[in-house]
Image (cartoon, rainbow, N blue to C red; front, top):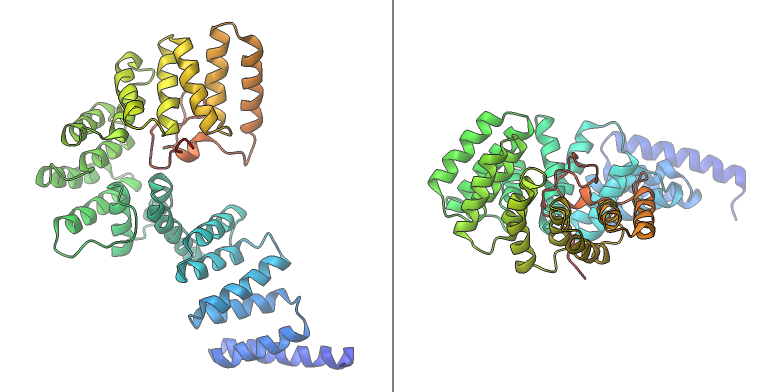
Length: 379
């Protein structure tokens, strides 16, 4: 067994040599030296971090991931290490684990490095798009546009998100699909920068050229909602339904746009959405809100209770239920629903806005009430 003083001296020498090799871009030498130093001091957090970054630069993603995992074991609040672990997992095709670690790192916070933040957001967007979580994907990718990032990869991803195209299959060059995806991606980036006039022109040209393309009117309607032109948005959603009569999300968007503005007019769309996809929890929640707003309290309770059973930790459902129960004199259940709503609205608690389009005008925490792409199915 080596004497402590000798071990400390050897560690100091090896760690300094490893840092010099890293700084000189002698990556193979740096890996060997870091590993020898870490064998002497396994709890050397900075060493595991440096080893991870060197392995990542060598495209040795499996070994890099192991090193970043050691950093996290030593410091569970190492947000940047979690992001790097997620990037390593992405490169290895481990999408679910990659997304979990990227989102955890994002929530904890990462180093003040704009490039790392951009890489993190892009990969979160890609992974959410692959899973069909289009609202979450759009949120991450649009943030890059607001930072003035523009490239073909970002444009393609945003276009696929706008068209609700899941997976990673690229459109063949020169096809209508590739043209539409690129055009919508540019428009979505412009909209993220609040350049709505330019975005609308881009969309209008594509809609005119490809009026029957799946989801193109739906995508345009979503953009028009962002531009606060609800009437024009509803028209586009109706055109999508004419093209594709079973389009659930276009109906939900119309119903949501009519909530509290013309709730009786929104009811048929919500009812049709429930009929077309009764397993989607948001359809029951939105129908329940419209019924509540039109004073059909017993029917509202029935729909909201279905939504609650499917999504028992969604605060807005309890807010709406409390109101419905109160209107029919079920005071104890109303009080219980309000208490659960308050508890779930605490920081870091889940909210329905994580599964919808965000915003907030109605006091329910339901946001703008758009169904988005991340709504939870009934189990």
